[in-house]
Image (tube, rainbow, N blue to C red; front, side, top):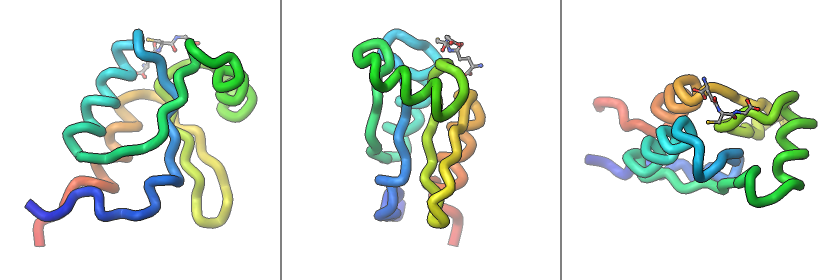
Length: 96
Ligand SMILES: N[C@@H](CCC(=O)N[C@@H](CS)C(=O)NCC(=O)O)C(=O)O
């Protein structure tokens, strides 16, 4: 298998999550399977992260993936299934 996470721009992604949230665990598991490492912000342990999520994304539901696009636009992607689909489309190797 080729290097999965050869994308050097993973710093454009931040996962707002909670250790106790089952849906967040699904996303963390998918990240581990794809060998993708990105920053986690635990909203249960840091009120500042919770406030960031609320003001940026509009609600405190986790998981939420913050995506910084190349044009500086920021997208707040909720729903574990949608986050996993985004990650899979970006990081799963395609057949040559
Ligand atoms: N359908 C959502 C469910 C996410 C969800 O229910 N998250 C809970 C934690 S396990 C939550 O953030 N609840 C608090 C809130 O919505 O503000 C998903 O698949 O991501």
